[in-house]
Length: 146
Image (cartoon, rainbow, N blue to C red; front, side, top):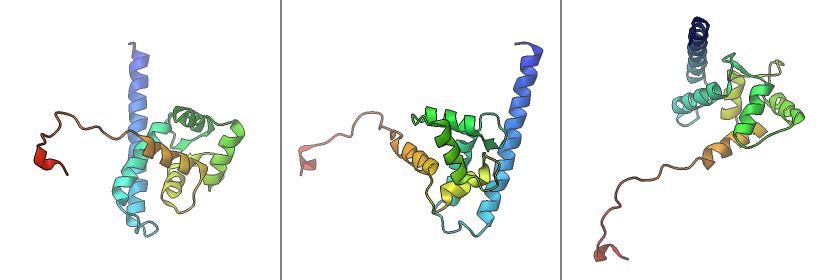
């Protein structure tokens, strides 16, 4: 690894940390606000959504653009056309940036309105395999039988 690679890695780590701090601030605003105060386990859900957003914001820009959304959909096994991706962004984008920022992402995930992206992400979460028990099964006797 040469000097440029080390500097690039440090720069990436710094961007990642700055993004995480910025997203934490948005989470704090959501926790202090009244808009989603009725949402169950809000703090826990915000942390999950932050991790998911950071996973898909590949360049740590704070926005998910059309190429990042394309890669997200492919990773989820839901490849979409360019037009479908543009429509997905338009459903969520409230500031006209043609990207999905974290606040828009949270409003989509926590809000009552369903969008295609929200439905895909919700089904993806439900389809994750549940943790299987490990170790030996509990011992049973004839008295345990119904």
